[in-house]
Amino acid sequence: MNKALLDVLVCPVTKSPLTLSDDGSELISKAGGMAYPIRDGIPVLLETEARTLTTDERLNSSAGK
Image (cartoon, rainbow, N blue to C red; front, top):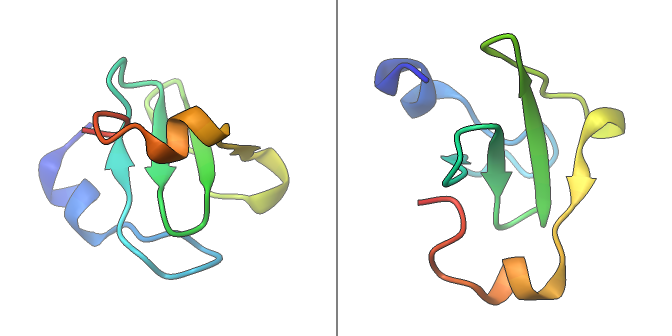
């Protein structure tokens, strides 16, 4: 994921910053408690496509680094 693009993308629900997951397959919104998929290199920033973070993921400080 391009760093410049990541710097301007925000969660469509909370408008908070997004971070890239450890494996690079999702954009994480800690404030919204959601993970948005990245498909074929394109972030899918639709609430209906996002998954809810588990409690462990929300508490794990390494998630989304």
